[in-house]
Length: 251
Ligand code: PGA
Image (cartoon, rainbow, N blue to C red):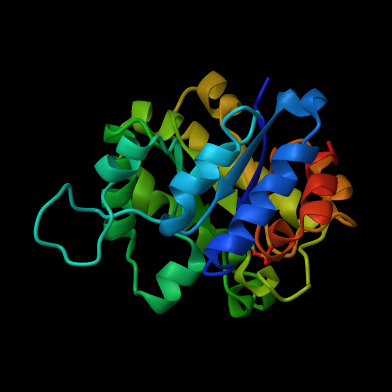
């Protein structure tokens, strides 16, 4: 059985006080029956220790949204995987389309970040997904296949087996437009097929593949009902405790 996962990506939102209120609300209202689902809050770096303290007696886990591809040293402004490990972080989002677009992150850099995270026992949530023009010209499968191959070809099977993958079509992120369950399932099945080129069938079947892009309480159930959709990476709706809890309860 694959793990069901709902990860919240807070992005660059909230103040310390607002982050406290949101995590307290989730910690108080998370249903202990949802232990079959991993719930991960990916917060800005500065909120990580506070969030971990607030959720420590619950099943909620905490992740970061980025880490450095360098181990340590003179890299002003960077946060290393070792630092994240030292505060107890277990997950990190890597290769989000916003980082690829606004910070020019390449597959080479993304691979370095994944290796740093894994070397420090942090599970990467590795993101892929096509822009609108690839979808409308029907080249979305080729585009995502290339994104994955560029990274997987530099990882060992053992490293790939430890990833969580998030498929996030860029045209669906923050737009209110969601991929249809059929569109998402098609890509998730493709991603699993690509995994079989690197791993044995059994290991490929164990990897959780999350869908991201305008997931809400109102559409999560029909997305999560698909065979290869193992949960969601949730942006906007993860800032609303009521809607986020509804998504968590949508399996
Ligand atoms: P969204 O963001 O849910 O606001 O579309 C998802 C993401 O970018 O991870």
